[in-house]
Image 1 (cartoon, rainbow, N blue to C red):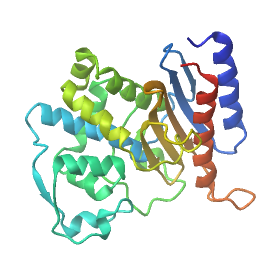
Image 2: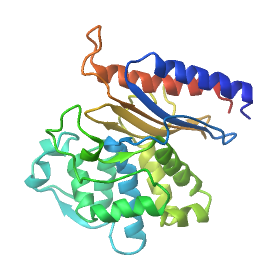
Image 3: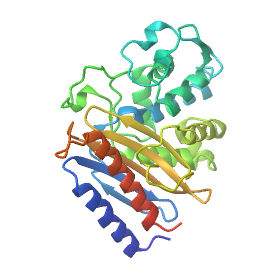
Length: 287
């Protein structure tokens, strides 16, 4: 169990990591052995970037559970899907490739491929995904765009993008985790436990290893989804230790400068800051 002394020590270390940088860092940490949480600006609206895709995945799985979508549906990659896309590998491939909706969800999550995101989102509506978030308790999450425009400036307003909160993303991950053994949690997500197991495994399959996993021991399992925004970097995930869920961390940097005073790109320090937050949790929490 996490003792109060340990919790206070961790909170002090986490806040010191954030205070050391000139940009904003918001986070929510949950120790899974005790359920205790530590937050900083956890309820403040912040750009979601691609961390929003976890809720898109769950909305699609709910539609599949209800029989409105077929995960085995075949989708043809058309050239139009690559327009205004700046992430993933599909945009470099030859149109005509056929994949399943299930594979499109996988591509959206494990490589953050926005061609795949378009494939998934064309089978949902923006209102449906936003309403889904509100219905499961993600009251601070607002889906405003299918794919954010590439020409966004680094000082764009919050209303120019999909936004969320660190608390919302930690709650979503907790509910997906709970659904592995709880029908009530699966019902809350509107999915079967089998679909929730697929969702968790897809998060575990994440290929990109920056931010949360970057300072953890080699081979540590992290079920997570990161994001690249014009205002910062973000990452939300479940960290495992000795095969068991250890802690959940959702961290969002904002107002990150393009370049730090020493010339280092701001995004580099933003990702490193999230990595340091995760490492502090690894060091200070007890399993």
